[in-house]
Image (cartoon, rainbow, N blue to C red; front, side, top):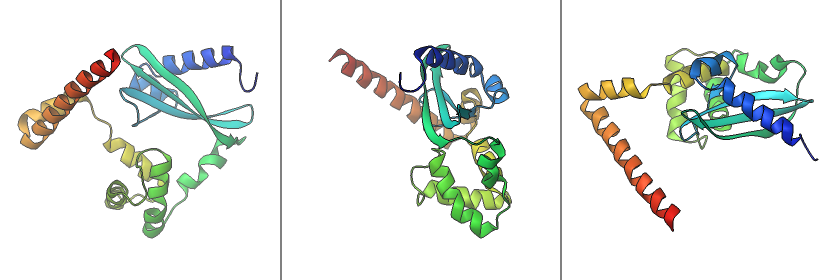
Length: 184
């Protein structure tokens, strides 16, 4: 074989699924929510046999959708070497310069010159973030919400109610399109 064995892949996928069955358990085992997932997904950087990988697991309810690992390069013996740059205290100017690149590499934004990156820099400045790690923590925190809380809030906020309704309509349309493509 080139790479890891099929047995290791099955075991690794099973463990990833079991560690991420709910948000509390995922956080306990060091998984980060992955915003690129269709339903629910998590990522976790690991070192295996001297090489660094980003593990990704996606599932819906209690069904595993996919699990895979992306090769990131040579691993570090000490995890702090890999993440030390995230804890470095930066000036507001340096944070504004470096944060967009981190947001793109983390999959939060698609381009460094995007409006999301610009808004994130302003948001982090307003929160008095002094490091990339603090900034990422604050940004990830604003993307966490429950559907139930959003639906409750939508009842009293006309703009949010319209947005939730539009999203529900889009899901219906995509489901119809997906069904017609599957039957073709």
